[in-house]
Image 1 (cartoon, one colour):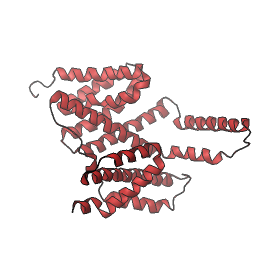
Image 2 (cartoon, rainbow, N blue to C red):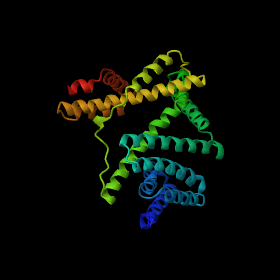
Image 3 (cartoon, rainbow, N blue to C red):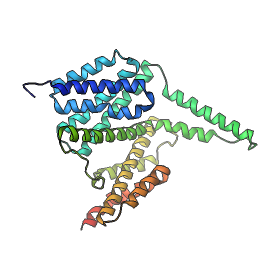
Image 4 (spheres, one colour):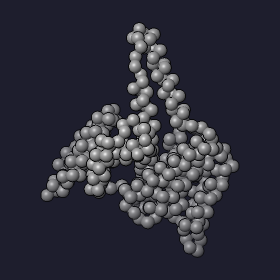
Length: 310
């Protein structure tokens, strides 16, 4: 590769990215799929080429995005380049898959944040105002429906306030969405690398997922602080506290879910219990995440896995 740094696959990666970008722009309803696929050519560039050639390829892609419907293609390209570069660099350094996942999540968070800023500043479109208008329209339609069927005037102010508070949890929502994008991108990329380059990349079993114990302390500290934080998100410190608290809670829920997989494997039972738990979380997310969070706290605090191993 040092003697012939650019090979045919370099052009294949660049061409694949541009093709995916065109598909994303021309067929909007599959954007959720193409957003996962777009970083993969960048990951392969980063893994298979020296940094200077990877940067050259990324500059080529960024330049093309400025000429092909730049309003849409530029932010999408920026997202793919940042997330793909972080995942690709981690794979290049042979880091643990979960560490690669964390860096990919950070890349997607940064990319989505830049897209949010691009929409707000460059396009002059307020996402928060649009959400507020949608909430108001929905509540007004509900009020009209209640009056039409004779149920009289109902109080929807509390409901509106709760829905508006969701906007203050945008950072944690952004992180969770980024975690989903990152793990799907990484998993598909592993499959591509294994198929094309005959390597053996894979995620470790989910039952081996185990948070560092410091996360338990972070969760409890944020829980204690949340007792004194404003519940209406009226101040910036309260917004930060509640976002960190909810993010730590989601990570604890993942810990609890991974313990279920560990338990069924250790006891040589079927995976019915964790599968049912996942379905319960999907259909009843608040209750499901709460129960998994408790299990994760117990697992991490009392080191249940070590006790079972003994």
